[in-house]
Image (cartoon, rainbow, N blue to C red):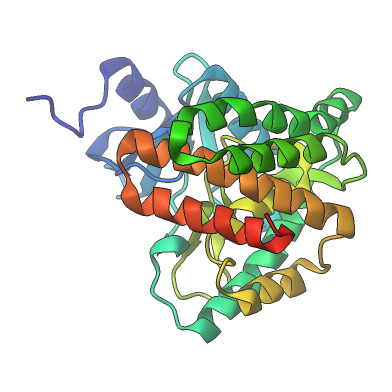
Length: 296
């Protein structure tokens, strides 16, 4: 049986050339990112690091760019620090963050509001980090259209789980998303903010996993939150935007409604494939709520 903590020799050799001999290697459970991550310990001083290998060259490029050009704006302790990278191995060495994923933390309603308020401030700093090049700005402007184009594929994947009326509703959301073109752009996390947040009981949560980070309409970072913790907690949503510094514009609210519906269909398709009943049920609940809001 293969050791789950096994680290391939070329990758380990690079890590030890960078850090020094390692005395501990432990593969971490899958998290919000599809990357493989090992917790490693340096023998000389017992310092801890995370060794992360990206799932693709694109993910490696996005994440290393984020750590070099945007993440420093979050401030010390609010995100991992990039120690070293290897394009050959699609690998990076990062400092670890304390605590647990926010999605797994058991918090009171009041505490959750406080954490989301501070998370709003953190996300605002990320969105304002850096300035896009002309090419990045063009790609950011086309990002929502690409998400809209994927809607048909996800709708087909769920088969008869959607009625004819629901299919038309999803198509209308995708069509509307394509014509929303006055949306604020920024540097987004892109991978589901709540899943990337870690909480250790400190005054401010920290953010990790930037392999989907890019310049895009900032509203995309609100989708997973609207699909998850905000769905039944309007005060948590309000606290986030109080920390963020502004509420979404009318066009952003329209885009968020469209994106949340498309995300629900994508989540429903994924839940059916994985036979994850809870994920599929959540997706159905979100989709039904959106339908009721517009009278479908």
